[in-house]
Length: 298
Length: 225
Image 1 (cartoon, rainbow over the protein chains, first blue to last red):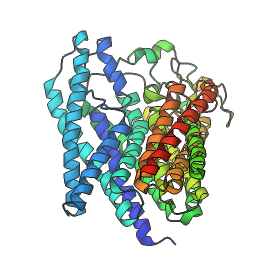
Image 2: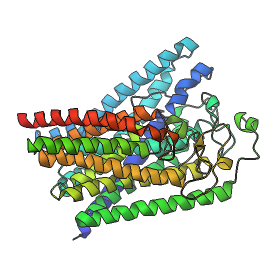
Image 3: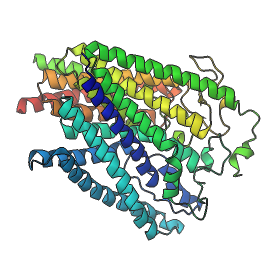
Image 4: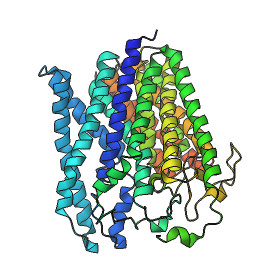
């Protein structure tokens, strides 16, 4: 039987997941991680010098699995060996992880930019120093929310997996979602803002990223300011819905869970199909657009 | 001996299901993140792991229940993650980037029958997740999630490992099969209607070999405990 307490806990997990998703995507934008990073990496070869923070520690799911595992494990040790309450233990765990995160971010960025030296690209030390704080901060908030929702699932909803494993697994999921949803907004919309709205960018133009900001030269913090208005909240919404529905469905018993998740899946399919139809009617076809019109910056 | 045979069957079959499932998942890699290829804008392994491991969490929540319950909960957990991710992905393509979901590999969507070619931006291989890819993704989630749950069941119930160890090993086996599938796909795939889907038999053979080796190692590990 489903109780209000359990539904409340699932909702709390969903809320924490929403925060985790939004800040995970913000961190990947300010550090230019995941798929769009390949274009930032390619830019110096095409003589497009930039002031983006260019890091790719690994794919987002794997790096967030690492952060979840580190923060979860340290939290677990602080709770079980040193008797700290959860919030204090999580603060220590997330703090330790933030230090490791900054080390990885620095080495990844310096390594990548140093490899662009053969094209004459400089390493801007002010970019390194100014971006490390937001990277660690956004990553810390995301990791804290992941560890917290893993704690609720382990301690209160009695999931058989231990806290560090749950934090690692949800880390993979939040990374996969951030990489699949929010990064499209950063990649397709922010890196190529000088192309006509609505057109995908031809592959041949991929190193031709936008380098000018509203004022002056663009850096990655301008990107997170832009993506915080659409890409980040939607990533948060996505991860929040995944965590909420998968936990909420489990409260309906063994077959009730299957039916509930089946209905959610079917609902998503129907909504997506309607959105596709509406987009086709609103935007029309590309038949009348000349190739040059899309390739040349406006 | 009975245990070994049961583990051999479950892990090998689970591995094959994961590998086949990954082939159904529509992924466009970095090009899709630039709205120049159809599918979800991330890597094959990454998305499959994200959905499959969500399935592992929902399957493990039913650890004390019968086999079929664990299997279906794993399958639907992964499918739910895939469906929500693809839906929100489409929101970003349509309302953020401003392009209609379409495929460049087929003239008409095999499910809706809608024209595709006219909506593809010149110079790209499509963008967004059209209905056929969406359905394919859900099928991929179902197969991958149930495969992962099957491996977890073999380790947890048949071999009597702890839930944590079974979870970690199942995650490892899942990643191995997802990477095998990723090599076979070679970057991007739109779903079961993609010509690359015909490469599937090779992947099944690879997973068969991997499953046999993994089962023997898992069985040996369990005898040490």
